[in-house]
Length: 267
Image 1 (tube, rainbow, N blue to C red):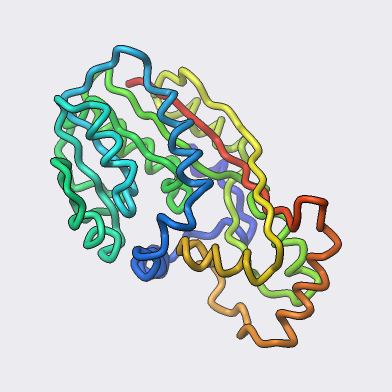
Image 2 (image 1 turned 135 degrees about the vertical axis):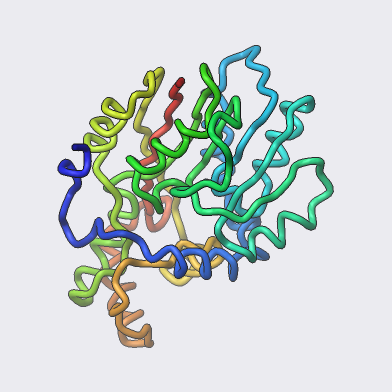
């Protein structure tokens, strides 16, 4: 039923998970240094966990380098915290951390856990690479009765400035497409969860140059796109991209916006 609501535009095709995992694996060593926005968003997502909530088992979906998993472990010191990620490079990095949290390789859309295993499932800026409907079904399955799902994700409009600049260069798809917020709201309403909160917030970063911007995206591992035919980057194409992006420059630099949603759902 919900699948009929899917946006059929080419920008919202299913992501090649193995390409995503490979990119994030390569970025494991550089991710944390470039993840200023990601850390800020994760901290805000944590505010969705009610004061006094004391889970016994916690799952961090798309745990990446494990930085937020460690924070969850420190926040809920009496709980057993598990980080799950598809990128083996990220898991290898995570396992080098000194923490009591445990790590598991797994696909968010097909979690390797039994039904009703966790009191809290947390995820920050990871589930946008998945089908939201499938994620909600899996999270609901592994949550215990009265369990919580607290998350942040991205929706349509993210990186709009970069997308617009690329459109002045060629007709290839260079920016990952995400579902519209309205569609995510519909999916949530049909999920069977109690939607305690689901809000959209605009975030903008600024860069001194296009080269700096592209290097940071590569360091974060988010330079995967749905299309395999992007065209090779060369000096001429980079110059065209720089010229196109200059039209968006402000006093603070070249803007790159993110449309971030924050949700707290209860089972």
